[in-house]
Image (cartoon, rainbow, N blue to C red; front, side, top):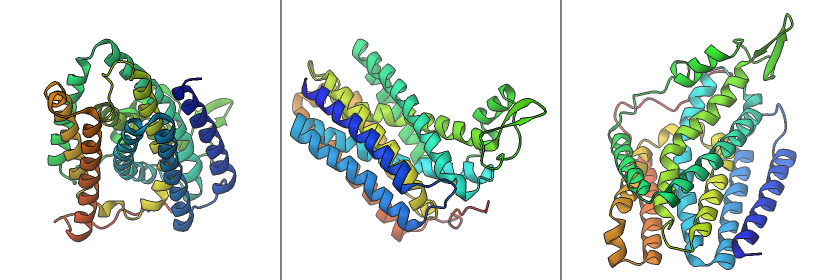
Length: 330
């Protein structure tokens, strides 16, 4: 077996085992998750992701390990934006707190499947048409600029989204959760509950966020060096999956404080612009800076921008921002 195959095998075993632990020991059906439990679960997933980084360093070397860490941090920081939208979706459809855990899990597992498909298509395009990276670069610079200048008052309304309107057109829906079920039978006809709608929307919203994050990861990972393609795929897949798996515990941990990160959006925006410019100028950058150094620079930029925006948010309150978002569905 090659080093990449061994790493994939270990990743698969760790993934299955950790999901069993998370489902069987850390999560119980129809039970509320406390802040302490969410903290333990967050430590569990982050610790697992960092342990895998150490394993990748030992098995595959320093460069892929640091690329993995950079990509994971990029995805993890973008997850905080996901959480704010998740809170709005749960509130809009009056999801009961006892159902949060399994609804999030179902949505996240679907999101993982969609991301794997999305990454596979994206990597295949880049391998066949390298100029696609320049399109990704322009897209990231534009997205970063729009994100940096966007007003926090532009609130997402789940019930006005195209996803929800499309579901209403194609599926028979009922305006309740069916006492915790995804579907109910009324007069011999099957109807889908609000919980089913929420699961689909969580997966779809995550895929929308992936339109930013996956091109950003491709800008971090070396996808052009001949012979490194299989390692690059490994880094992209594993960093994405680990970041998404930790999304559920992060939701429970941050749902009461996520609105405190007033300037995180600007920090992420700067990272996206940085990576986009790096992708556009890669030909010239490669002439002056070796790939290994580029990985260190990307990792440093991500850490500084994300940590800096979080700390800045802690001490500087944005004018006109409402108080913390709380769940009023209980």
